[in-house]
Image 1 (cartoon, rainbow, N blue to C red):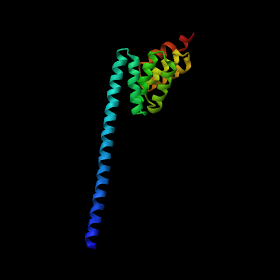
Image 2 (cartoon, one colour):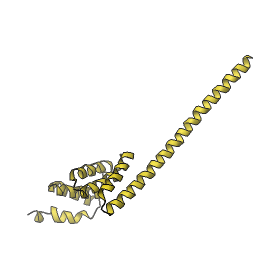
Image 3 (cartoon, one colour):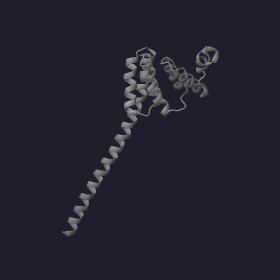
Image 4 (tube, rainbow, N blue to C red):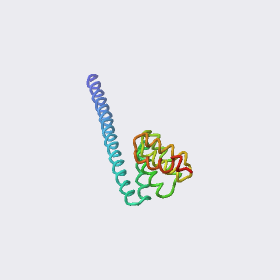
Amino acid sequence: MKNIRIFSSLSILIIIVSLITSGCRTHKNTSAIEMSSSLDSVQIYLKKGNLKLDRFKYEEALILFNKVIKIDPENGQAYAYRGMAEYHLKDFKGALEDFDSALKIIPDYGEVYDLRGIVKNEMGDKIGACEDWNKSYELGFSGAFELIDKFCNEENKK
C-alpha cells in the first residue's frame, strides 16, 4: 500500500513537471513566433512607409514609422525615414531629433549626416550643416559634395 502511494505521488509529480515544462516550451515557441512576426511587421511597415514617402503622403508615412519605432526602438532606419517625413512636413526640430537618434544607433550612416545637414541649413545653422555634409562625404556619400561646394566653400560664403 505504501508503494502504491509513493508510485501515485511520483506519477502525479511527473505529470505536473511534464505540464510545466511543456508549458515553458510552448511559451518559448510562442515568443519566437511573436519575435519573428514582429520582425516581419517591422520590414512591412518600413516598406509601406517608404512607399508613402515616395508618394508624398508624409503623415501616413509618419504613422508607419512610429509603428516600427514602437516595435523596435533601436531601428536606426525608422528614425531616419521618420526624420525625412518630418522634414517634408516642415517639422525641422522633429527631423533633427530623429536624425540624431538614427546616428546614435548607426554612427556611420552617411546619408543621414547629409539629411541632418540640410535640416541644420534650413534652421540657419550653416556651420553645423557644413560639418554634417563634410562628415557625410567622408563616410562615402558623394551626394554631399554639391552641398559642400555650394554652401561651405569660402568663396560661396561671401
